[in-house]
Length: 413
Image (cartoon, rainbow, N blue to C red; front, side, top):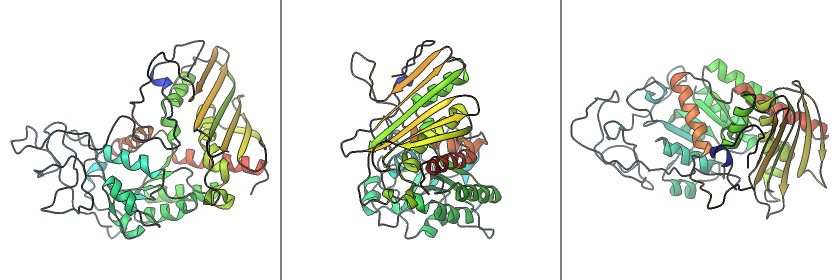
């Protein structure tokens, strides 16, 4: 629960993260647009041109684009209730970038959804699940590529499979990188070489130097590189940020963040510190980013292991603003339930949150929007309007750099 001596928490602020390491799309569902198409006159002619005249509420597994088959779901326009057609595939231009047919990246007052947006999803693991669901809710057409054949994943979500990474990049507008950490830099570079917009799961790269190089390449190409630090979009952390910015807690003196989840399987690449960065870069990174977002740059820090091995780590951060923050992350035993908490203390009171606490007398509704959906909607809003995203490319680099400092304090390369 969230609690404060200065304000009463809102219901949204008590919802917070789900009790799962990869929360899904909340109450929203792909295919939730139920309006049927119509062949009658449209009250406002859309700039998208001609109209499709058939509608399938759920994607059909294995369907392919192109007339006369229109079995893949296309979202209906909210104004005229018709279905926008899929645009022709956009091939790279002679300059290596996307062609000029990328309708979704320009403001369109008639269609406020990503009706024709083509997403290239790289990776088909656990973190790809909430991403693909969010893109489908936004009306995007998703294609997936993974080093391991993602057949079951593609069939479950009704999406196509690309034969190679380069084929995927050639056929999409945005590349969404959900592959393992050691592949991030390689995949992002291929996308940037074709001047595609990029969403990359945290961390941007295994090292801060590599992450900064990717940010520089994206800037040179004139495209977005978005670091997907989704915890900034969780209601409990949004509420904390709002209260701190409003001064409701007063002058903050200390804060504490915790995060725990069951450890990956023993034979997983996550346990190779050279590839994953261990619990610090994989799990603690979320709350290191929170510490930076809520309280600013860190002047000095210390770190320690709790118990044997590297599966539970605590870091103490001294911020330039005078706040002392402790951050603890744990890969626990197999039966460990995903849980997060924070406590922030200031001169006017305290704000606390614990995902395991419930402040209610009856059933608790979990029918809320997925933070992954809110995050990707923020990305689309930026691409259409130029408004900044909540996470900047520099934020992505700063989080990796802070994680490296924690690893160095632990004596881990």
